[in-house]
Length: 188
Image (cartoon, rainbow, N blue to C red; front, side, top):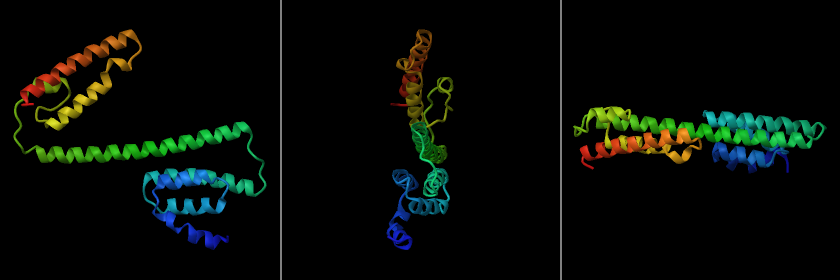
């Protein structure tokens, strides 16, 4: 199939998310034409995930072009290293996507908090709220989110060191009691 005909058959890929394009490129590391097309498509996108994926595809493309020019095949160690690099690139792309989702969630939470700021909230004991690092005017959804965060961070099963486990258990119990009191004062 000629290069022009291949590009026509690849046009449907322009609608694919950046992560999927990267996965497809990694599945076809020897096809230099395909890698060039994917690299060009990722280069047109103005998001960090696409930029990261484009860097990885550029690496694959350099290897594919090196092979096409008669470069020596990679050793077993080189293949393992290449596999590790591919895994790292994939994990970086996933991490960047997760960080983007966190930033978006934080922005939505800030907007929701500003919207709720004008609503009168029942008094829940400012001293209790401050002990779990919340403002006295924090809405109940934020209190519940903080409670979940405390549970995840200080759950004793996360620790193997007996001293750390005991400290985490004490903090966990104290936080649970504070959140119970806040919930009772807030009408839950």
